[in-house]
Amino acid sequence: MGRWHRSRMWIQRTPEEEAKWRASAEKDARSHGLMIGLLGWGIAVILVSAGWFVSFYGGMAVQRSYGGSFWMRLLIFGVIASPIIFIARRVESRKALRKDLARTICPKCDTAAEGNAGTACQCGGAFVPASTVRWVERV
Ligand SMILES: [Zn+2]
Image (cartoon, rainbow, N blue to C red):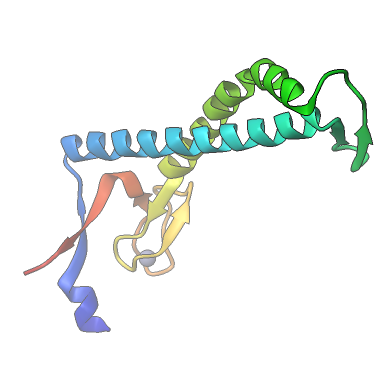
């Protein structure tokens, strides 16, 4: 165990590496946001087209009848509800990125935490943002 720890360590990232980390974190956050947006949109459109309104407050589903076939409604509601994708994508990707940026690590004992950069760790080390350090293998 001790040997394994000595053979690897955390080092400070260079500004370029940090920019690269941020770019990839943003990319991940955006695709995560898009996935949530598409999922929410798909579920909402299918439910509404099927005539089901789920009341989140009452926890009940209320059925309403519209004219036209299911597929016609699916098409119309799909178009009407499409902004959901973009809104959810923006909100969710921002949330995901904030979470990524809040991730911290104690380089001394590898403890991962969140939102406590600069505070002292139990081991005597100090937490740093995970975006500013990276693992290296010592040769
Ligand atoms: Zn520690």
